[in-house]
Image (cartoon, rainbow, N blue to C red; front, side, top):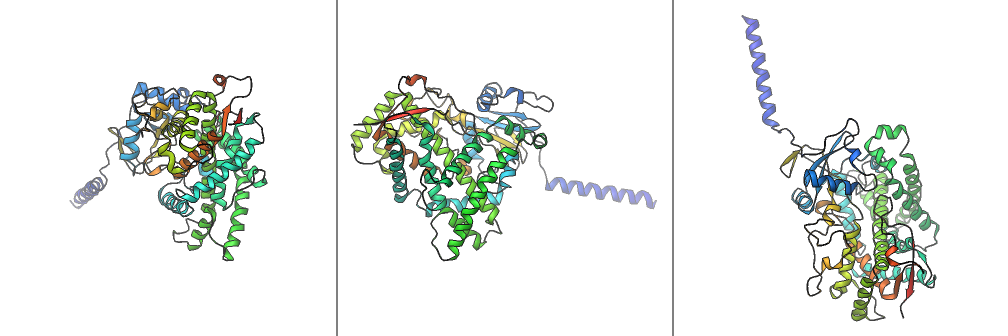
Length: 491
């Protein structure tokens, strides 16, 4: 009798533990959104165009709805398409979608550090520090506008040197890049400075490589990519950049140890690391990752947007003429623009906003569920990659009258007054909204208005405006193709 009694006690104990475990973890089974049937190994990759993955995903959303599942290889990924779905997820579920999934190439580059591809406490600490540091350096204040206008004068000097002859479009990126350099390193660089030239060249090469099919393949099949060494060209360029940045960090660390003032983002990082009040989060490796993030994002995004803005003005001379007419009326020929005058320049502001909407510079950067999350009636388990498709917001047919056309009227009312649009989300939204949004807006307005105040922007002689190439070049961002324009001084 003792043996059956023992078995009964063990069974009762097992049931009791099972009930307690289920009470502690009542997680229901995941409920995934619909999506196309995956192929073995490939998943749904055969349905996605390599160069315009965002457009392929928009096409799939027309069949499967605003919230759907795709398989990128073996990885289940949820896609959010259209303004309503993206807004509800990023704003309504902002806490749950604040993380990034582990993207293989950025795991190798940043090792979980930095600002843009980190998650959890390292991301929160880096972001909070960066916001404070940029504010203390004058971002969003008068001194920042003075810095931008100084750079505008230097850029104008370069353009004047061409005497109305064609100049390379990429030259326009030097000014916003140098503003980022000044914030990072505490001084602006001559455009022929070897460090400036080397870093810009490396950034350009890295951005092209990050958008290449080989890196897309590496991110989807990292084991295969590692075997084929697909990541090595990117890492080689990153290592070259890190050598330059380490030398800058070392030089500033020495200057600060002698009692020098904090005058840059790098200085603030070094000072924060010396305090060590975040458990080592600002040690040298993560400091280098933060500098690399600010350098890459701060140069590429604003530089590419300014190039697009000037290219589209040459492509649409009627729009350019209206902007210049407004600038002449409000500012006259000699007074430079200031940030507070955007309200007095509604058409100029509308054009700049439309440029950013039309080009969809960064189509999507994936998020990741930090906990089991409900989206659109579906239950996604913790760790699910989620793509908020910003292209689908900026081209949403329910939000824009002519989404596929360049039309500044999207941001004007019937009386010609500027209208803010909720679906204008080029900087994303929620807790992961771009940390440099305020700086980018100031730079773009002052540089764009200043250039159009001074120059007529034209195609090369013999080239029709309608034939200028507005197809994006293959890169991590949707940057314009390399081409030439003319900047003819206005009388």
